[in-house]
Image 1 (cartoon, each protein chain N blue to C red):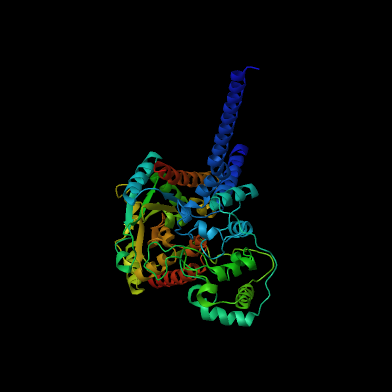
Image 2: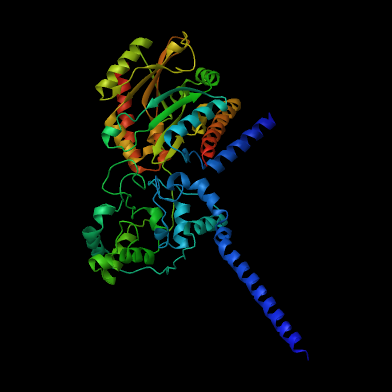
Length: 364
Length: 151
């Protein structure tokens, strides 16, 4: 046998093997490099379409809470799915109707490769009274005396407040119908990295029993075994109409005086379509009386900066073809329903009641 | 007539499914306030609407611990259509002109509007309902177009 042929065969074989292994390795590398892209495909689009406006381009939080990877790492897929589905009634976050496949893609995108924790669905048994005591000692300061959470929207962007992020509402039915007892316990004991939620095990030497009692107390706020988000009917019509006893000019003047008397700052009145047309006789019969109470405005904007869509407060005065003068007031209760914020609904009711009184006084 | 009713049904279905009933229309724009404001103004014109005037809400906010000084409302619409509708349905007057709220949030800007679809209970004919649907679709499209300019 030719010795040189033997060695050249071996070399050729070795060369081919190395080449094959390299090709395999680079294929593996390609798969590894593109795996995140493959698994997130679709999720980013769903996020961009539905979540980005409130949670931000890079999940940094805004009207909605930040969706940091370190936060998501504590949440099970079940919790995230139910949270998206139910939302948080009365707390800005609406419920979304997404298909199971869309939810899976979205959650995969939010996780960005972080492994989903698994929690047992077994209920935790604890002493509710003892949990209440622990809650009042350690949690009330952030989560509120009624477990109602912090005021306002998710992340505090525009207001100088004590906290950067609004603490979650633990008594919210959306939360209670999404969170597993074991998840709540874990968060109490270990805290959430990069947030104000500290590890109570580490910082305050919480025992297992203390955490169990606390979970039992939080769980005691769940109203029913199944989630239902019945939207409450809004009281009153979409627009209130008042007939004035006076002519147009007197009505406008009386409205302005009345608004000032009700602590509104009154702006110069406009014709309804000012900026569109040259003032004609017709347009002089459609006047918008504009006013604002800054304290009220501040209160509303603190609760939700989007409230600007209702600004400024106004009463529209129109003289019709028969010479009758009517005043039209928007019922803000319908508009505020879209903000999914119970506190705003309460405040808006007060506002619209005072506006109605103001108009009634002007036409009386 | 049948076609019109069918078209109306399709529009109602499309609007309720895509917008999620009558939720606020919001878009986050990857640009500072001034760029967004310009883009919004241009887009409104490009879509056949006219900007009437703006309302500044920011002058008092800074004094009241509001970090951003950029908070404005732009009033706009199509004059002839709004005039005609107000004449027919005076109860629509408190909602005219249509408006978009523009607020700065750090390096981004939020543009927010109430969906015109909420005015549907105030009108009576299919033709007028179609007009409101068109406003609604235009409003959504304007906000999307502004957002897409700074993707």
